[in-house]
Image (cartoon, one colour):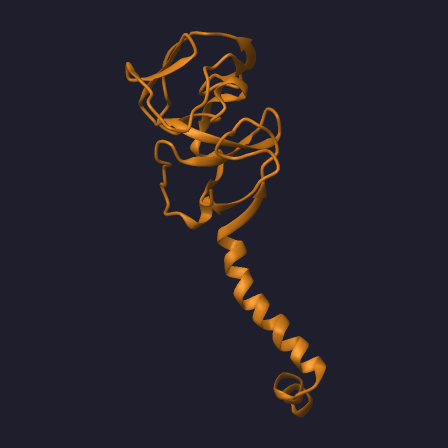
Length: 179
């Protein structure tokens, strides 16, 4: 007991090191439980996030049960097909009707007006909700589709070079909180 007390309360370098490590563990562990530092790899979220930029993601486990992202939230979603995490912008919410006409996005028959998007959609991945079907295609028009109750429709801010489509809310890893 005396040795332990001397280690924690003493003035030796070992005691100081133990105190610093203990303090760091106590302070950093809750942060890492709720947040994760991410490296942006790719141009699909340009101009908001640049290739090679570091950002901060709040993990979904720190949100209330039943959390649904808001429109225009920047999220990180797990893509099972490509087995990668994608940083995307939430455009369509559950129950909404999404359509792409001449590369422009319409939500419930209204042209999407956002300050994030750059360019028109050209060639990208489409994921059919409720199925395992995924395909790449060239398009200017995508027929209207209703977003499933447990899905969101996402696309990168660089609309000309971005994967897009329906993703299950349960596949969202977190929300970007640092721009």
